[in-house]
Every structure is written in C-alpha cells, then in structure tokens.
Length: 175
Image 1: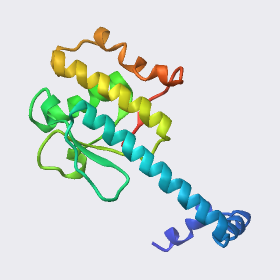
Image 2: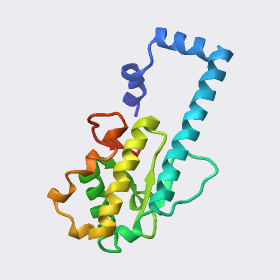
Image 3: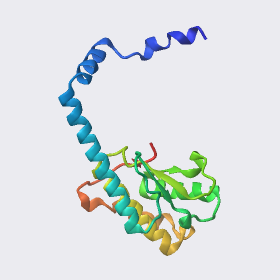
Image 4: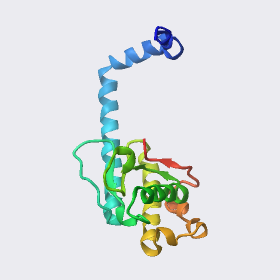
C-alpha cells in the first residue's frame, strides 16, 4: 500500500493548470455566467429528450433534478428477460449508433428500463440521437425486434440527418 501513495505523481494536476483553475474559481462574473449557461443547456436538453419520448409514447420517470431520464422500453423487448434487454441495447447501438445504460446495470429488477443521459452530449447531438431512437422505435413496433434484419436497419442512422449534420458517429447517452 505504501507504493500506491506515490501514484498521484503520475496523475497530479500541473501547477500552471492549478493556478488557472484557482483564478477561474475566484472570478464570480465568469462563474455566474458559466453556471447560467450550463443550467439553460441542461433545461433545453431535458426538454428535447422528454418531448421526443412523449411524442414516441414511451413512458419515463418524471424527475425534479438529475442529468438523465429513466425510460421504460419493456414493450419493445424481444423477450421479457434481461437477455432481451441486452438484445435491445445491442440493437439500439448497432442500428442507431446510440449507447444507453440498460436497467440491469443499475440493478433494476424489471427488464426493459434504460437510462438516457441527456447531459453528456450537446443539445444538437441529442436531437439527432432522439430522432434515430424514435425512428428505430417505430420500426420495432411495426416489425418486432426479432423481425428486423440488418438491411432494413440501414436507414436508421439517416434519421436526424436533415437537422444539419452530415454524418455523426455513435452517440453515447450512457455516461
């Protein structure tokens, strides 16, 4: 254990960075503006996420605070098990390039719950992710999770493309 005490040498914050951060943290005008901007972005991102979920008629937990929305996608599971939840998570990731946190990872007792972390990405990227998720949910409701083949899922990542971004990589909403 004594050897571990020196690990901070390799991961410590440099003195110049500490000075810059100390200066920023004493600048009340900067902090007030920064926190106002962050709050506004979080409110906007939450609205984007919940409005799209309501449009999709996907149940979610209404929260008074937090950085994520807890959604119930259990009706979309290929089977009502945690294996079914893992299959749906893989389908969402492979087809829509969106990473969600499955409920199983949060010790949820009922399969099909997922966490969407709307605070992890910009509102613009979140809009694209929610469009992709919406498009995929429509396909699953129409054909079933097992009734979809890779060829029929090629167009899922194109959902949201009209919003101004040409090509977006995978969108991680699990953090």
